[in-house]
Image (cartoon, rainbow, N blue to C red; front, side, top):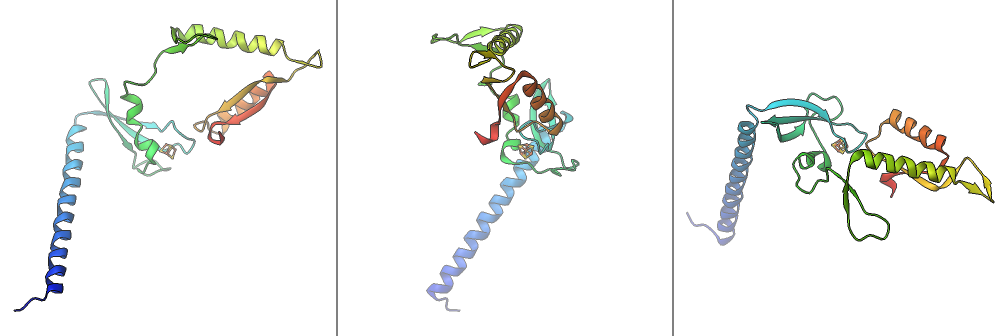
Length: 183
Ligand code: SF4
């Protein structure tokens, strides 16, 4: 049988695509098997993604006290196992050498960050809020609103948390309440 140049190219093209497809499928299967073996003896627990108020469910696998995998929870009614790119990368929150776990403070005018305790940070923040609150003036008269403080809410807050947060800020007299996603 005589094969034309066009037929030859078609035939080799289809064969090459089919071979690549098989290799790709095998690589995906190998990866899935590797993951299955990795988490086989791990303790699994469920959690909620902290990144936004969609609140997708995730399964966390822990071995020897270390998070070794996080993936979407197929039984969760909101996401049914799927995750966005942020939620899929949640593993990096648990395992990340760059993550800050201690309070860092840079004093006004200083070029250096100092390590402080959480109690120090809470005391410092509350005393600064009180000073600012007490100094709230308008045309030289004391007022109950503060223009010199602003509040930023997070995308992970749910309705109830947003309600409490805004009530708390309004009670302090804060006028400028913003949302992190708009900045
Ligand atoms: S950040 Fe993504 S995975 Fe996380 S709750 Fe929101 S939509 Fe779901």
